Length: 112
Image (tube, rainbow, N blue to C red; front, side):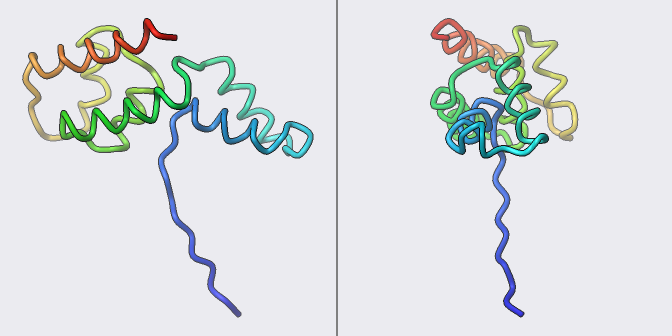
């Protein structure tokens, strides 16, 4: 028996939508269609923008990729909302850094 190598990648909701659309709706099973419907309804930014945002959040702010994906999926509008995504960590993030993250999200939110 051959072993299959499985890799895991965190995807934002816009990236999931783009991936499922590329497969063609006629080729999707019922769960994939539900996922596509969900992704379409709750889309906050386009896939390319989401990918760039995740990269920027990881590189510039030193956040974990998993946190960044959730932040981009929800696009919080306030520091209080943003803290929800960062509460799992045991580190303290300065308010100025949180404000910079919100400003970055606001810049891309307007481009939608």
